[in-house]
Image (cartoon, rainbow, N blue to C red; front, side, top):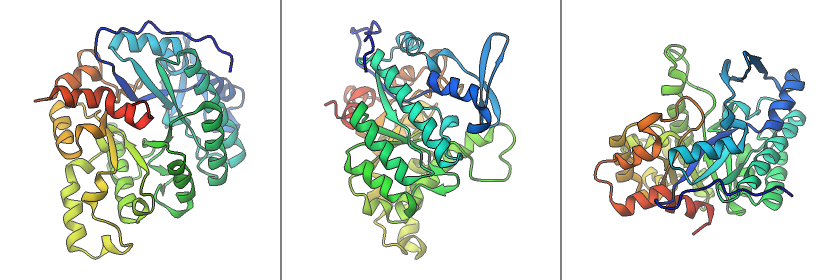
Length: 346
């Protein structure tokens, strides 16, 4: 891919920072949706000179940081972020499409992400997008992007149109990811729980962390993690509720027969397999996350450019600095060493 490479004017007088939770919607995807909204089941609108996209039923402004790598890097410079590993925004997962359309738009997304990375290779890394409605096509696309773009990570939803990621139909995809040495970044896009969720944006506040917690539980108790012994999984939003309820899961595994029907290992043992971003919006909660998981399993995640990203003085680097009792070693792991380990950039 012949693209002019740019440095993005990264500052070097401070510790290096990596962001592993940063979303994009490549321009090629935007233009394709504008031409064929019916084919792809979503739409792009323009009002008063601004563009908006359908984000789970509500129109969200398509900020420049979604599509323009120069705008993304400019934002990184403003907030003190050196490297961002960019991944598809959940509203463009497209798992709901028929396989032919899903494969087409996913390839466009991956090619667009690769072009963004190629413009700023010292500042951006890419995560693969997969058409999970067709596991065979997902494996083919995975192999393509690894060969062509050398992506080191895959973003997957916590469930695929209501089916747990732990379901056997997806096992061969997870095995292929494991065998290729990539890690998975899991991010919810649906709120599977029903009842009381339609008010106050609770589908995001409660539903997203709950979806992540349910994904982890299914991966644990189904025996999937015992089968996929080397698979690394990074969870968004501080891991949902799991880091704060792991004791309950472990106790239930000890005293109840249901969690043992598949011969799964102890949840405490399997918990060590997961990595977490520190997007808890509360430094004291992140302190607990460090205690439970270890700083070597925690990374920065900003959720840029969505509105649930930290703002102003609470930007994620500032939240890291605000963690009570943070040691220099812990800060180094969270800011870059864990991310570099996952990416193979030791």
